[in-house]
Image (cartoon, rainbow, N blue to C red; front, side):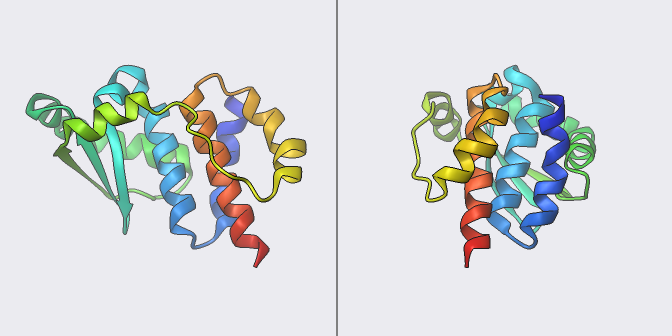
Amino acid sequence: MESLLKLLPMMLRLAGDNEEVREQAVFAAWRITTGEQLASACRPFRLYRRQLVIATLDATWKRQMEAMSGEIIFRLNSLLGSPMVTFIEFRIDRAHVLAGRGERSAGFDFHHTGEIESELQPAADRIKDEDLREIFLRAAAKYLERSEG
């Protein structure tokens, strides 16, 4: 999985100014950076102009995460290879966090199935975390869709 993480900055460069790909990459980096326990209590909601909005379960989690935000921003940007996040806003949104726990491989349509099956699926299969695997494939699919036109 270490080699896949090294591909993330390159994918971002290749995607250019694609906000959807940047958002998915930041969401994937969030999960890696925060670990399973924090990821289950705080879930990315949106990335807008380098400001990451994170939903938290309650006020206690919100306060704890705000205290850690500088370190998290540093770790996210280090993993992504560029300053993708300059500020994190934490909001209490229990429903959004809990909804994320139930999402497991909801499925999505690929138009570039040949490229994904031959080149990306073997790499994705090495990602043990199901959520991270899906985020990786979604980001790649969005990039392929954008580069088609």
